[in-house]
Image (cartoon, rainbow, N blue to C red; front, side, top):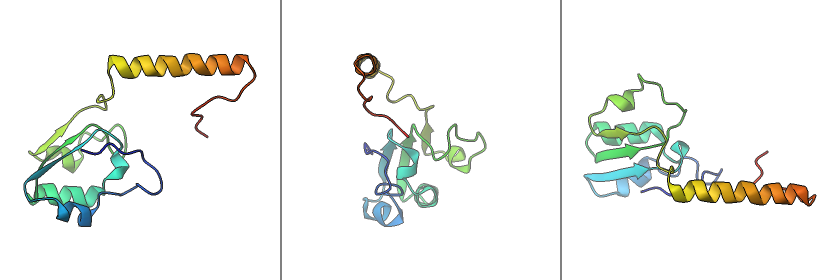
Length: 115
């Protein structure tokens, strides 16, 4: 199971070399970020049976195209990016938003700002 943040260092982290080190018949689950996986290497490992299966909740481009060849493989389970939808995650998001509102009110910079 991949539970890694996407960064310049982790993009394409799971490539053909990494997949080759997994025991034959292994399954891979990715609820983290699509770009952690090398698409072509994953497709090859799945289509040849090197990997028994993959559970994917995230994709290289979202939403994934309905006609993407990966979705046609019988050993792929695809979900619509919902693995992180839990009461806990929503509570943590709400707490973070509230904390940032307070930070703005006090004239402080916000946390976890992107760009």
